[in-house]
Length: 240
Image 1 (cartoon, rainbow, N blue to C red):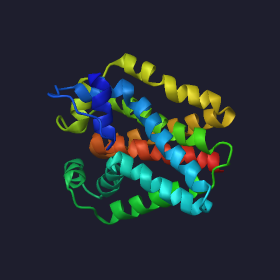
Image 2: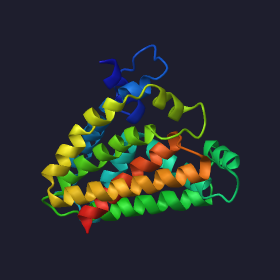
Image 3: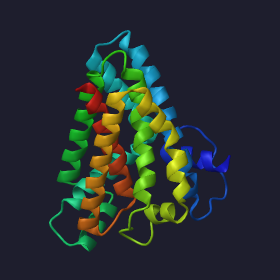
């Protein structure tokens, strides 16, 4: 299936053969599979987390699991998070902020944001209740990638780039079909799952509003910030 293979190629480093050629808007048409790809990422990480927990302390298990998590995604969303920290927080005009976000170099804000995100993730992973760790690790990446779909319907900060291509192929029904997996997991996790969903929704709303205020809309980097923020908020909700 072309859309599924595109989703794996865009969001993971897994050896899935890429379709050739890609057409404009294919990234948006593949979005219905994004939460499923998140579920697969979570499944691999959860399996590693369980096996590592048999041998190592909770903190080492969390650190090694997060390392695998970053490898599986190629650090794509972490890169978006750091770019957003550098650009959105810069005291300048929207055009200059977009230039900073497009720059491949990482600045002070980006370094601080990246470090804080990793610390929060490791700490939350290490603090997950034993009986809930596996479903929560499945839930967080799937939910994060569902919110990419929601972010794709927001105004664009620039007329080209990854965000624009994604938005051009996106359909409203994708939000519904793509939500089946994360919503099912939220219900399975009970009241904490619903609370995590609400908290993540509020967090994403604030991010999108901030992005519109600072750069006029969303970009591919903002999508990365959304994913990382949702994952962190979800893990922290269950670690509390």
